Picture 1 (cartoon, one colour):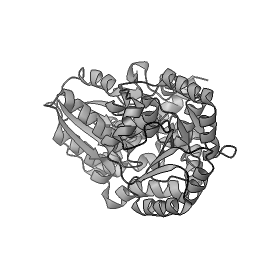
Picture 2 (tube, one colour):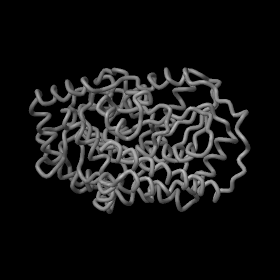
Picture 3 (cartoon, one colour):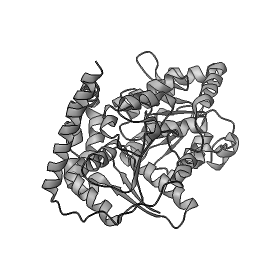
Picture 4 (cartoon, one colour):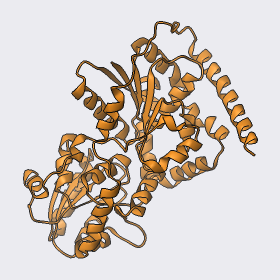
Length: 418
């Protein structure tokens, strides 16, 4: 089986998911050929790649309100508006390179781990034969307004049953939808003794443990974080992961030394991916952002999360969903970090209810669910596919023409429903 995985860089969770799926497939089928491409880096040029990778982070760090304004605006727009939007048409310069990759590599299966890679494939399938099965994963608890521009997937792996109806309204069929959960590493589905995990991490086995995932666009400044730690009413154990932010870690080290807090604080720098499962197992609660993958890793491990504020809109939806389900707590105008931590420590029933609610919604071994579908996908036949003779300009012209017809048909469908 030959697999092409089409990913993208914003937030890095999409590339991380692609790698996890690749490793899962190879663990069961070592003879599989798997190629991962970042669509924007591979076919979009240096500026496009920078915009997707660094521009997203800059927007979330400095102009998240503007980012969220346009996100909400897109939700109120019509299908036709979204279909001709910049977000959709920005994929057009990459379509020729992507189609050529497909025709040259001849995959049996194409896996999309980012919404606009699925949009790109949907645009290509309007005009060109793609024999491979194409599947995609939803990596959030909210639903992007652009999924209706990506409904040419053979299978769409969604988070839970509540997504079925919204996806049907976006033009998917029930047959396309697989309720799987968000795919995270197998290590998060394995129960590990908390005390044993702490010992293996070099921590005190008996102390209440807070894990802080201080990753990109973490909205709480270091000085404020120290002030919040100082307001925690009893000594606890705090482990801080800093991602690749070496400068921020060094500043935090200085602030921790100066503050002389009563807590045991381990300020780690970059933590390898294969160590996160054990760190999560050692924690009683996690303080972090609202990214779909990190939240799912915590939920799968059975660990409640305190979710910070000042988030991009899709992470706000993730936070709202888990808070509404009683699986997470939120930092907001009424509840600070220290307020929520003290609440959990001083009220055991609150903590027990969080754990109880998590067990109701978590899905274990999601990669196994995907693998069971992978093993049923057929080989693709490219023998009848003609060579690609269109120029990039001709390809875009064809797709634009097909897109306009699709929009016109959508308008007709809407009129017929009235």
